[in-house]
Length: 318
Image (cartoon, rainbow, N blue to C red; front, side, top):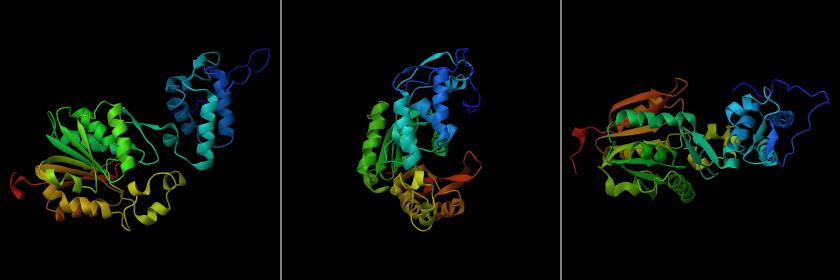
């Protein structure tokens, strides 16, 4: 986004317009622009503040671009600027992610509710949904699962895409399952997805051999890498959802080990992994007996996903 604070609004012959009243919701664009500049003078990035103004105060990208072009235009904010300023100061001083402060995160074409109990959905994870939709055409699989569902973002996206399928969302954390339930309820999808507490495949054991597609964005950051992450991630997002042992592959090993038994004949497993783990994850899926194993790249062209299929010949149908 072009920085909406680069241009200076014209001043009247009587002098500068008064500053924005931070407790009002109807504010002139020029006053918002001056308020925004004052906030950025103390630190932070324009992109982050624009994001907060858009998601929390309701100023669209178009509104932000017109702040300097039409300074007399009256904008109606969703919340007063004083509320925005309070969150902005917390973010700057404590490094709390803005998504947690607002309680929401735009992702794909959805708005996902988030708390510090779940990982903030990343843009690259949207590609897991695209891969799943490419692999399964028509009405979708009869049963699919999301292992380590966290916020439930993947479960929500797949349930919307496949209204005639049964989804199963698994997580070890009660708090994460509560967030996932809130997101499914928010999108009116609770009847399409069952929530299960437990460790990866284990809560779904009664359905092993019947899962036609399984997605997982498991923890995959090596412990040493986690320790060096930016404070906004390391100090606030749940470590349970981020790190996974010395090489970052502990969770993926567990998922791969039971995949051939848990998947239906011809069923697909889709995994997200760390940027430098592609070869190792490909090997783990092949060693587990899956075929059609191959890598897919993320938005920056880095191998980030691995797909594998349970050969129909490898299992007897239930």
